[in-house]
Image (cartoon, rainbow, N blue to C red; front, side, top):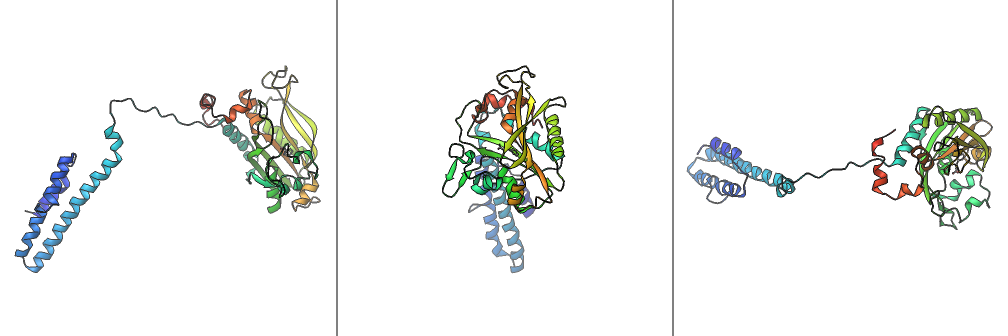
Amino acid sequence: MEISALEKEIMEADLSTQEAQQRFKQRFLKRGGVLDELLAQLRFLTPEERKVRGSSINRLRELALQRLEAVASSHSSAEGATLGDPTFPSLVIQPGGRHPLSMVEDRIIRIFQRMGYNLADGPEIEDDWHNFTALNFEPDHPARDMQDTFFIDPAAGILLRTHTSTVQVRVMERQSPPIRILAPGRVYRNETISARAHVYFHQIEGLYVDEGVSAADLKATLGYFIRSFFSPHTKTRWRASYFPFTEMSAEVDIECLICAGEGCSVCKHTGWVEVLGCGMVDPQVLRACGIDPERFSGFAFGLGVERLTQLLFGIPDLRLFGQNDIRFLQSFRRYGCFT
Ligand code: PHE
């Protein structure tokens, strides 16, 4: 039989059923099949003819094997489909949504990125130096207390960071100004879990250090942020405050969005809610991180992602963020990617 006719037959054979495949094997690959017979006839040929014909027959065997392999692999991948009932309603695939905290974090980051801030990252397990000492916390400052801080190794001062100011220290240690960074991340505090407090939450801290950075820059930057994040009409109130690592420290409140300043449980009937802490970086902190405070100055700020998310969406209880309750999470699907 002609080699080319056999090749055509191999390529076009129907291998859709087990029986057809069995017949195919029988005809081409088994002992006594056509290829076997052709090989047997080689002995009647001259050595040269034998060589040519022999390799053609081998090629046909290869082709036949390849075709069988191809059906075998396509069958194994389609196995689930062929076993299933094609008239059965298909699975409803629920695309996952973004967690509200991620949406809000992205929104915050984007606003500061427009002002030239870059992202910086650092470890959640920290040492005393980066979490406290470099930031000017006195040795007996209450925040160092076991009541507030989760210590991993108290003797060695290894702990879970209580704020992402640690990242500011790390960046200042390795980079010289101008520095303009945003440090988002999870932080830990040993609090009793309630509607208003949790043992972990998310912060975004910012740091800007350069020559001639002033409190006016701080005020303009955070004012722009608040107007972009909430609305151009959001009213703010600046209050003097205290942080060990800033000198001139302030907290910023916005008029309560839930009651429009009338007074409600969210704003504890004051009409105002705190949204961030900030201040001019204490020269002592710059020096501890290897930056000359005679030449450079800077500001820093820290905001709580949970707090801003609560205000924006009117979420009464902080614990909802960590419970993975599908009804809560699904209620944010309509916002899409939001930012
Ligand atoms: N690190 C402070 C906190 O966790 C927030 C803050 C950052 C305040 C930067 C001022 C400046 O409470």
